[in-house]
Amino acid sequence: MKPMRRRNFITLIGGLAATWPWAVRAQRPAMPAISFLSGGVPRTSAEATQAFEKGLAQVGYNVLHAEGHNANIGFQWAWGQNDKLPELAAGVAQRQVAVIATAGVPETLAAKAATTTIPIVFTIEGDPIAAGLVPTLDRPGGNVTGVATSSMSNMQAGPKRLELLHQVIPTASTFALLVNPTNPAAEAQVRDAQAAARSLGLQLHVLKASVDGDIDAAFAALPGLQAGGLVIGSDQSFDSWSLKISALALLQSVPAIYQHRAFTAGGGLISYGASVADAFRLAGAYAGRILKGEKPAELPVQQSTKVDLLINLKTARALGITIPPAMLGRADETIGR
Image (cartoon, rainbow, N blue to C red):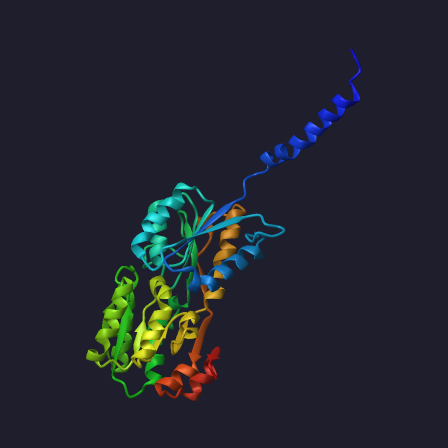
């Protein structure tokens, strides 16, 4: 056998060096992919998505494109149109992602309809059993589990918003409730709010909005109803339109209350609801545990009990409203001092 020439040897080694990284890369397992499904928009969902990513990081998954990146996350937005959710969910299911994270009841129902095998981790306000998401809380079974916020507790968040608004405007006897009729939870929101109104001796009118144009129509109806304030029902679509809603409320001098900080930061009077950061952090940690091999059927539905109260004092002054000192003392944050 002839000895290998030096030039041929160098060429052979160089070829191996060039192909070896690709061979190793090909042997590496694919990075797990998570899909985050929301009826909202990125602008008003930043707090939720950042908290979800923080929860993932707490159990060892870094979805940020930096050192230690070991999972991918993609976001599917319905931009305030719940009727788009089934199509988005079907597309996610076809991609066979490792976990689907959902940001509300309509999102979760759409994901459930799209797949019975891909794990689904929800974050919702309300009772997941009543919403048809899981049969039990301790062992939900199937492919769905997640986090339900404090409205499952004895202190219902929706009725509490009406109570808070009445404390701010004690002379008002008539209020309005805005709900999205395409949200499966809307019926329960109306029922609970009407019960709270009766207990407070108040009259409650129900307004409905499922598309952007309905918001204008709802506000146009308010003067005729002589409503002293507006309670906004929980819905991702309303998150998308929160800046518009807060602007219209201020323009028409209507005190309004919603669930998320983005509403108050955008000029709304009060926000009261479950801590978005706490709930989505818990959901992110659950998604990470599922990526590590745990089964959603065996993970009990968690309850996020942290509730945030925010008050925009600049808006209160513009509306000529004095916030009761006791409420100010309970507030987690005040804006526009």
